[in-house]
Image (tube, rainbow, N blue to C red):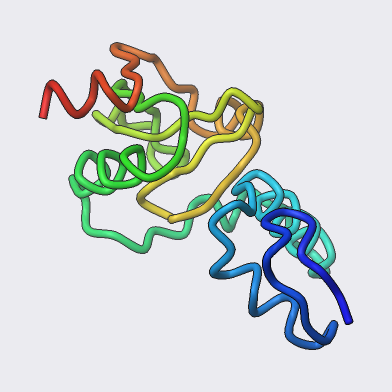
Length: 138
């Protein structure tokens, strides 16, 4: 039997532990991001950059998705501009930043290191809100 070190409430067989982590409310998202980064790097011929560029949402939905996300977790809602790696266009954008040095990017629904995000998208921060400030401004 395995006991969850994050919530100390779940105990079960090792084969069910990864299923529990998907629902564990105390499991920090940056650990999930580290796990994702390791998975990506293990795929032959791929780095984390191509995954960061795969869009899963319609353009413009980043503001809504980032706001929804910050109400549940994350330290700062960021509004700013990024440069599209594909065609070098400057785009208005929103994302979520963690004090741990991780970013949640709403267009791709991926976590990535802040340094990777900066290297890929060259962000220019225009506004930075705590969850409370974001809720007041909504």
